[in-house]
Length: 191
Length: 255
Image 1 (cartoon, each protein chain N blue to C red):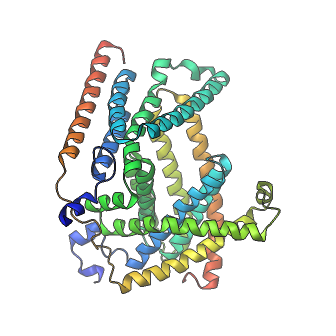
Image 2 (tube, chains in turn yellow, cyan; image 1 turned 90 degrees about the vertical axis):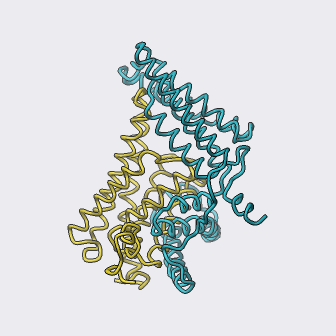
Image 3 (cartoon, rainbow over the protein chains, first blue to last red; image 1 turned 60 degrees about the vertical axis):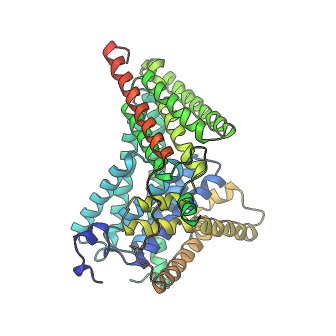
């Protein structure tokens, strides 16, 4: 069924936005992000700065490859939503920040769409990811402040963790771009 | 009877036999209300109620271990704050009665999380989300993610073993720190290639089986049981009492 023939109910449920194969790819990449962060936390001996950087680097590189494989508006929001829901189910994280993070990611995707969209300008994936990950970290810091507002000293640790993880995101973007180029060259991702 | 077993399969373990939806709802309510409350005594009241819920749903040994771990984390956080306070004296200005509020909030969240995490299988939780009428474009990737996390973990373990054979004798942390690009190539690239191939194969299989984003995975487990309704009522009562205590304390100037 083409998306043009779908009614309002289908549009609101997201039917027609993505094909089954794209949703499967988003699910698999989300599983890889979660499994690799779990593995790195186990092998790296907990959340030290090095593990944090590596975990974020792998996560952002996976997102770069995913956006090259499914270059559609909504891919990043959906991928973030799956990751957040999984963290919510596994560890009770992001109860408060989930809607705000989603709104932030959707705003970033809207700007990318206004600039021409990923299908026409694939390089938009990089500024889009850098901006959305920065927004996520800022939102997390703000929500953490709500939780520890009586003890501002604890914020120093929250900010340090966010800073290390954002550094990893930036490194991962570089690795992801190189990786995507090689995968395109090998024909594993279509141009 | 089959009908009864169908309903029962949606309930997790735990003494109260609550549905995952109820546990999710209680966790969200506990997190939001603990953030909204600020007075340590009101938070302590909410913590006491949440401890009753956790004790009813979790084995005592597990609960004690979780509390011991949380205590260790809190002690480490306080040590860091004390260290920062000795470097920047204005940070030491918060009175102790207010400084414990973040830890009380953490305790409330932990008490609400433990019954959910320990008594519900992840597939049941995903099905519960499906029953909450999540759109198909969220449900399908979420199911794929949950199904494939163990498979990918297994792949990563195999990759680690392969690297162990290939780089025998020089696998220490220092070697990988000096060769981050080698680490990237031997761990990350095989994972990505495997992911892309799996995504294509799985997509083809699911399309051949006629799997659509609006496929119903959740089933219909029927109305909430008496236990579910009682737990929700008790939670509303506990939050209401804590909010009333907060307002009374603010009125007396003790908050």
